[in-house]
Image (cartoon, rainbow over all chains, first blue to last red; front, top):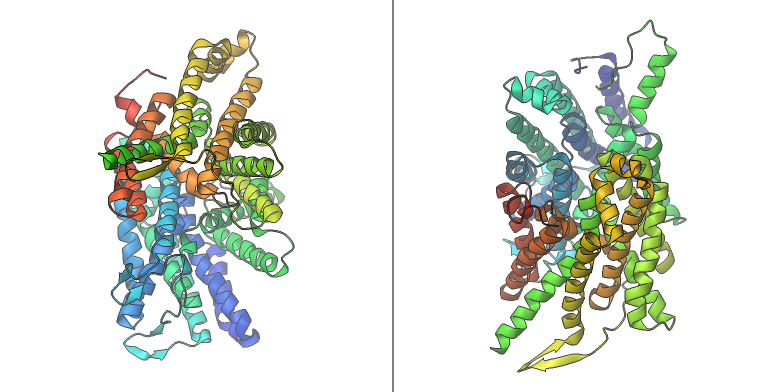
Length: 338
Length: 288
């Protein structure tokens, strides 16, 4: 089933996000607000993979490459210009262009799914190694020192467009990130309901048939991949801005596996799933991190394994199925994909 | 002249390292079509096995050549029995499950050994080549890598077990009809692949040291090598390792390690654009 333009679920999700965006700053303290800001930025990242993998069927295991590239682009540009608007825009454009380039080699080389996953994963790991070894004065872009594994501290944070002196305070940043999350969510829904989106989903369902019907499979995949790269880059810029810091860890295996886990836990082929998965796992990671009881990787590995083996559909599609079964066969059977 | 000798040795060494880290994966991926993302962690476990054994007083060669592959081979068989078995034929789910497994291993080793580098000294010392000193151990590694390739080739081509393994991968139903138990062959093959990864991890431990997260550095290179190698697991892996090892080492020598790494990846992506089925998709077809 192809996504409808405004189903009740979508409207409900948007309403919930709006309520959170407006309500949370009224009830939560500064620390909680900062926490939620980074959660929301990560939700954007989760959406990017939810789109590329869940709808495009493109096995991208290197989404953190675009995320990290966005973060570093933001950092380098913001330091050089002392202004964040152009930096944020570039943080979307640069990863998108890189995704297009990488996608060209992969899709036009007609690499199969699995190779795609491995190549994208390798790309991000090599970025990780690269950025780790950029310590020292030799590695600088303009005024910005890359600093290798130490990362780049005290980045300029977001300012009002056109007014570098007027920085956004935490509440405003939260509003902005929530607004961007809603824009990305709604935008992806509209995209999926459009002709382009339907072709992308059709390609996921049956690539050969789409090709025989005359659609350019490679181009559609490339475009979907590029869009996903741009969105991940935006999330990276927001993440770098949130901590005013970026380090090679944005490219690390832990980072990239987190994104995969969010989407697996939430559910493939939904947009709200990755958001929910991201929130659950982020919350869990924060809790585990503060308690020091068990290693985060250990717990994440177990959750990852458990979901792949026991709940391969993820939370949202499984709940949907359950709900559809409860309502009885009179209603239409649960959609296999949405 | 001395420089040339040292440079050739560097290149050989780079090639040998790539062969070592990829050969276990070549068996598991090339023969079984199982994408094992925990491959890097198998190497890491092999490294820890060798280091722990050596520190307990085991001879370093026995630790590297016997203990490491044995430990990791057993872990591999257990993983196959518990997890991989359920997922045969579901390539992407296998990939995800082994990814989960890799996080699990990283977590467990971090909990036990802490997030710090462990290492052992390289045996054998060094020899002089003109004005340069080269580590004898690195030379031996080149020999071991070559020996591993030869042994696998002979085992697959000339022994009954190798024949059974190849036949089962080719056509499990037919093999079963002839009295072979495919599940056992799968478990054994996976175990051998894991053991080879453990062996590589043990052998590389004195050179690069081990860290719970060291697997990530290996797994990317191993996959690039095996995929670029193509369908013939041994010839492909050897060819791709020679190509990428040379690119990496020469670039590293003349510029920086950073550019060496990037060059390796760029070479791989370009190669796959030209030869999507890997080197042996076009050349050396039909070899092993």
